[in-house]
Image 1 (tube, rainbow over the protein chains, first blue to last red):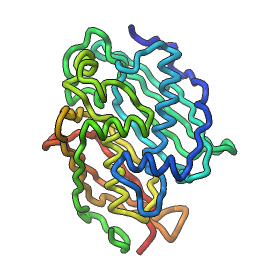
Image 2 (image 1 turned 180 degrees about the vertical axis):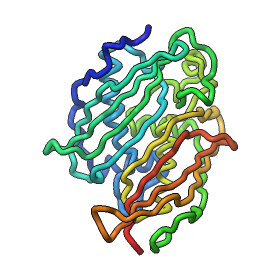
Image 3 (image 1 turned 45 degrees about the vertical axis):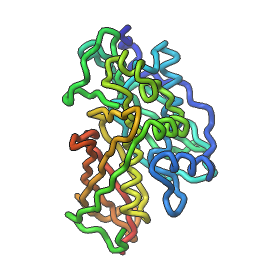
Length: 145
Length: 144
């Protein structure tokens, strides 16, 4: 099932508040190569919220997670995350195109703190693999992992 | 690791990371990304993938680890990449990725005279194949 072009521009509800703690930073760091000497948050840490925001979108559109492959992800920081932050992420569908049976979904997400100030923004491309696609992704396509 | 101001063209010591299926389970738990294509061979094959593949964000997380190991006093302002080639992780043993980089650009930090903005040229490979497309890292680094 292809996604519908009317999705473009739609913002999905924000994620539940996520509390950044020393323990949550340490757990994420341990799973991504190890902790920084100063205990600061890994720069890909907000993927925890980005993933939740994506799930909200997929559930709303009845898309199966196993048909999603991550094509691209970029984070841009206004300030570093710190323990004590409470963040929410809001995802908007920015673009949608169909390539060889797959939906290529461009999303933007905004991560805001308890004061509503933007801490970080993210761009992500999600590839929704069509059911009839059996070929392996080629290097030229925006497919990936 | 140097505490002097980075210079354009400086070559950073490549870092390697071994990835096992157990690492993918740990990453799934830490990130919340429990997509079965990163755990279950049958599901991965059924959706047309070559086998269980690493989360793209796990590979990027390791790239970020390398960047922070090279510049421990830096603040990461931007990080990202495309996921252009899957990293297939075998049921037994490990697959290795290598992260290498050079300093591409050094500019004044417009907001902080005590720091410079450093852009890195990065290369992330698995068994000689580039796995991340257009990898980018922009750092704010204290002047040495």
